[in-house]
Length: 443
Image (cartoon, rainbow, N blue to C red; front, side):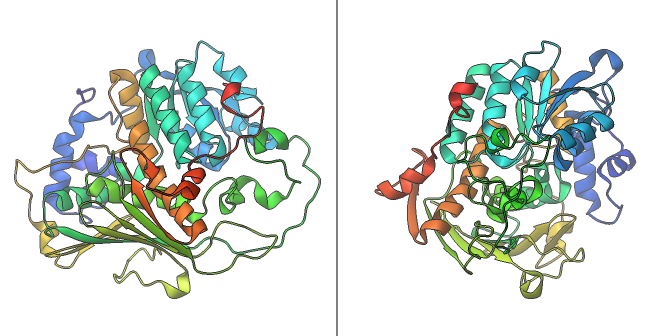
């Protein structure tokens, strides 16, 4: 990426990334600081500031919009919940409110959109945004189904709009360091990867109740089947229903499994087989997405990747995490292991973290600020760190896990054709029926 801002000093780099001086080896911090010219680290000048719109005004969406506000102004907000819409207009004074995102997209003065909707609306909003000639930062998981992802990638190719997937761990120095070390053979040939994700919620049964005033529940349901209103279906807890998401498998899995693909240099590919199982029965009338599960992926290069849920009482990551997080990734190579999670990196021998990589070492894409990287790419028209194809493949990895969990058996996968091999039943799960009028024809 072309230089758009001065190279930050090591001190400024530490301040910019919020790192303590002793939290990572000096050599890696210095290397990243030297590469910092590749990404915007300061707000845009007034003459270049961007007009953003926010679609989906829950807590995550408003947080993303506040980050974007460093580089522009939020001129429009949209939500089907009047309460969320009011909160967003309070956060962003002067932003015009909308209940239908299609009306918002008709505005010519909007440069880019932030999509913070529930998962089952991500694809339609993203596709409509790009067709309207606007760039988009879309929260993860990028899609609800693998078929949606394939369609979304095609729209991005046709429109050539910038799409950044909200997998912000790619802009974390800890995960980038892990990927650099792994790609350069610091622990030898990778044989196994273990991913631990937080267990989901196992609650219910839930009662129906009247739809709250000011909430367009039918629009919220969108492409999914019409069902009576249950408050636990909506807002934060939507992610624990198969209908709208995939539990923590697609929620946290969209982060950690994404890093596995990045480290293995498989951003445009995927596994050749997947096997999954649900470990506990869900409560009838309650959340449906498996709260506890185990998935095993196998790649063409022989790497076996397991993804397991874990509760606080059974946390068995094998490495003491000083931040007390119940999730993370452990890469096992022929010469040792590397453990990484948010705010922490460790290894079987700390010396492998301290020894500087050679000047000609392979390097992954550098970003120190996910939203800043998106803004840079709006200006440069280059690919961001997690573009449409990458976001699609990372989401697909999680969707494959969900399908395997629900079918409860081993499935063979062709990552080139993006279809299951010799399994018509499994291939029926690649797409879902979409309730009219909330299908592709609406955009």
